[in-house]
Length: 288
Ligand SMILES: C[S@@+](CC[C@H](N)C(=O)[O-])C[C@H]1O[C@@H](n2cnc3c(N)ncnc32)[C@H](O)[C@@H]1O
Image (cartoon, rainbow, N blue to C red):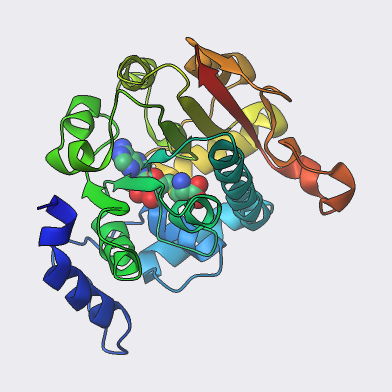
């Protein structure tokens, strides 16, 4: 029997729990410190956040008024890139740094194109896991799996029995690192983590990546943003274009290459007037 099928009762319980008004956070959740997942939820207008998250997010919005727009545009990139991968035959998605499920999630988009696609969600924030598991109640067992794990420990993710039950690493996988690597320091071996994951992937696999960058903001704005996140549960590590491009080593970028986030396969005429303020890059690449 599949691991995720075994958890069915637990998932049903999560589903009810997530839909009641007397919602209580899981006991291991630290609500006193701002968490990137819940700050991002706040930027997107969600309600799965606490006063510490809202306070930090409001301070980010004051320093970076384009924070909400950036989150929305990042979600559009995620949806476009997942559809792109699924339309090109990818049937397995490993989405690390999933975030609290929102409209246009990886599984929603992938299953629209390919109902048989397998999606594994990985996040290190327990609140994400709770909500993502609730979503599983709507999916046939086995098509969507949720793991609590840390990107900084790639071996633990790749060796996890639930991942192995859902994903065949001998077949192509879309590895998704969307707006997550800027929470991993260089000292925590961001480059090596990506290389470790890449080496485990079969030829034809894809890397779907977006990343915040100081290239589009004044140095004092970057400093203010980093200062606010330094008191949250994860730091903000903005990187320049060359540093972000090096995450694609061993992959070949597909057109249009690594571009400013709003510009990835979008019609520029459809973008909001202030799209140029979005401070990040995005790209999709294929492993040869
Ligand atoms: C800005 S959100 C991005 C969510 C989603 N990928 C998207 O682009 O819409 C970043 C997510 O990465 C998660 N995260 C941060 N550091 C992580 C780590 N070391 N391992 C796993 N997840 C992490 C956070 O909990 C959060 O859910």
